[in-house]
Each structure stands twice: as structure tokens, then as C-alpha cells.
Image (tube, rainbow, N blue to C red):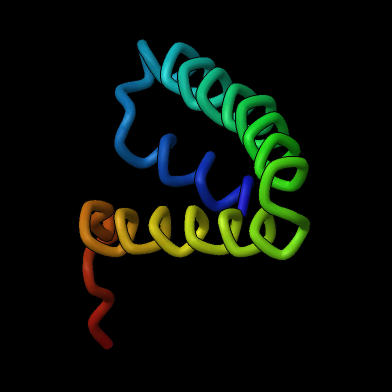
Length: 80
């Protein structure tokens, strides 16, 4: 997934601010790793491992829905 998301950033970001865009993406991605691990650990301690796995599955599904609804194709149609 990571190379695909970097390519999407490269498609939409102006060359002058492409590096900053990748930096912001990496910030949120890395913050998600940290917060996600903490949230999964707290959930596993409080509600059990199955609940933590279901929470991760729900968050992953929700993020997929957001991407499906909000992310647009940047490449034009190829005819021929």
C-alpha cells in the first residue's frame, strides 16, 4: 500500500511542495502506528484480544470506506 499512496501524492502534489506533502503523510501514518498500537493494547487489556482485533478490523474497514468515497483517480482514461 505504501508505494501506491506515495504515487498518489506524487500525482496530485505540485513539485514545489511534494516533499512537504510526503512529510505530512508520513507524520500521520507514523502517528497512526503509535496511537493504533496503544489503542489496541488498551482495548485488549480492557475487553480481551478478540475485541481488540475487531476494533482494528472496524477501523481498517472504515478507512477503506473513506478512501473509496473521497479519493479520486488522478490518471485519465486510456483509449486505444
